[in-house]
Image 1 (cartoon, helix red, strand yellow):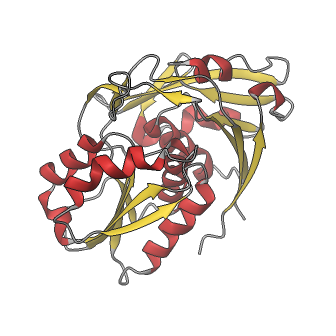
Image 2: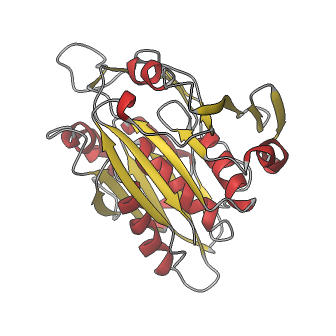
Length: 298
C-alpha cells in the first residue's frame, strides 16, 4: 500500500473554497459555467495562476509561457515546489493532471490540493434525448509519456475502465485493442452519481457493448477520488508478482484524478489508456457542489 491519503471538503460555491495563502494555481481552459467560475477564484491568495496544456501530437507540455517534452517536465515544475500547490481539475485535462502531478510527486511534494466543480447539468444531443454532446471528436488512444503500457503483453494482467456518458469511447478501445477482452477487466460506473438518476445515463448506453463480455462490473462514487483510488489499489494487489495493469479514465473527473495519482505513485506497474477527447464548449451548464481534494503523501 502506498498509504496516500485523499481528504475531501465540500463547498456550495467556488467563492467559499479556502485556498492556501501564496499558492500556485495550475489550471486549464474554461469550457462552460464551471470553468468560468473556477478561473474567477480570488487572485489575492494565489502567487500565480499558470495555464497547463498537453499537446498529444508532439507529447509536449506547457506551463505558462514555457514548454518542454512531457516525459521530463520536472524543470517546469521545480520552481514551484516550495509553494502550496493547487490543481484546478475542472479545467485541467487528464493528461495535464497526470504529467504535472507525477512531476511534483517525483520532486518530493508531499501535500497539494485539487479543486473540482460539479455541473448542474450536461448538454444533451437533443432535448429529451438520452445521449450527450460532450466531445467534438475523440482523437484516439495515444500514449502519455511515463504511463505507457504494452497491452499486447501477457505481463499486463488486468485493466480498469472508469465509464461516463460516452459509450463510443469504450467501444473504440475494445475495437482498437482486441487483446483487452482476454484480460481481467473491470468496468466501473459512478454510483452514487453526482445527482440521483444520473447513473442511468452512463449504465444504459454501455449495456450493448458489455453484453457479450465477461468483464467484472463495479461501482464507486462519481465524485470520490479516494474510493476510486482504493478500487485501483485492490486491483493492483490482485496482480501476480511483477505484473502490470492499465487504467482507462473515461468517466468522471474525480475518477480521473484518482487515476493520475495512482499511476504517478505506481509507475512501474500501471499504465494509462486515454483517448484525448476534444471537449465541446458549453458541454455542461450551471454550477453544482465544489470539492477540494487534499492529497497527503507519507
